[in-house]
Structure formats: C-alpha cells, structure tokens
Image 1 (cartoon, one colour):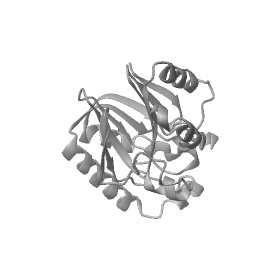
Image 2 (cartoon, rainbow, N blue to C red; image 1 turned 180 degrees about the vertical axis):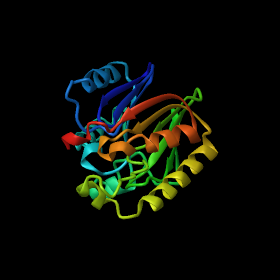
Image 3 (cartoon, rainbow, N blue to C red; image 1 turned 90 degrees about the vertical axis):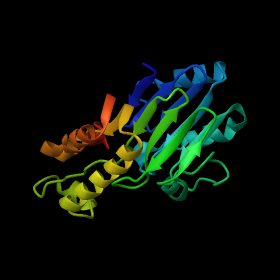
Image 4 (spheres, rainbow, N blue to C red; image 1 turned 180 degrees about the horizontal axis):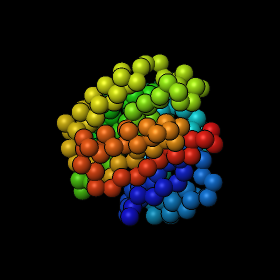
Length: 221
C-alpha cells in the first residue's frame, strides 16, 4: 500500500514520482528519512501538507527543508492559521490552504474543507482518481460533562453544537466525495466512551474503502 503511517497524525503517500507528507510532528521509529532519501534519489516531487498549527501536527523542520530544497521540487502546503501562528514567510508556501478553496498541482488537486477545530481538513485527488482524506483535527469532539475536565474546557461550544457542526462538514465533503479511497481520521482516547462517535458518523455518511485511524497517541502530549 502506498500510504504509510509515521506517528500520531502523520502519514506518507508515496508513488513513482510523488511523495506527500501529512502533518509531520515526530518520528520516533525513524521512518520518514528513508522516504525523503528515496524521494531525493528518484527526484520525486515532495509536498508537506499541514492541516493546522497545533504543535502535534507541525514540525518546524519542514519549513527549513522546503526553503533549502525548493528548487528540487519540495513544496509546503500549510493552512492559513499555520502560516500566521508559526510565522511562515508567505512567499515560501506553494499555496496557503483555506476552506472552500482548491489547489492544483501537476500531481493532484487538493480541496480544503472546514474543521471542527482550527485549520482545515483536506481531500487530495490524484491524477488516477485516487482520493485521500486527512481530517487534521476535524472530529466530533463530544466530551461528556463527566469527562476529562481539562479537555472539555478547551471546547468552546456545547456537545450538541459540536455534533451539528461536524455533521454539516460531513455533508459538504460527501457532496463532492461520496466515496473516498483512503481516510485518515482521529480516534482519540481522551473522548472516553465517545471515542468512536465521530469515526462511526464519518463512515456512515461517506463510503470509505480504507480507514486509517490516527491521533491515538494523544495522552503523551
């Protein structure tokens, strides 16, 4: 399978002339260098997609890599909030991701959608039609009143409002992509007994051929 899990919410998609790195943060098993070395050796185009600015979805190394290898085809595709909060020079990104907008590259089209947290969720459609959804922090963050107080306090809307927002985003995605080949989606243990609420709603709304859980190492943050 050309989609490889790195850590937390980071995945790598690799094919003959393309490498996509999603939300790189940490790489405790040292998996990413081999993909980057192969990309450099085989002169692949490399795209670093960043869904939002949170520290567990962003590693500043990718900015340096894209600065030094821009002429070699290494590209940065950060969300609008990442550019602002991480103070990225606006001349560096190939494009800045904003919900409701699309980005065209020689290898794929990227569509950005809303998130229930900051930043964006994205669907990448490759030239062969393969679709890759990465949720970022888009989930039904349904924290119960008797749940983890610290986490519940971070959610500024009620559980009912959260669910309504999440389901509306799913409708927007489904309108464009009723079927997805790959979906990278949070399964977060901090939600306790509601951990699977968002994933199951997502799978009920959209036909997904390959579901890839992510974000499940959250307790180590």
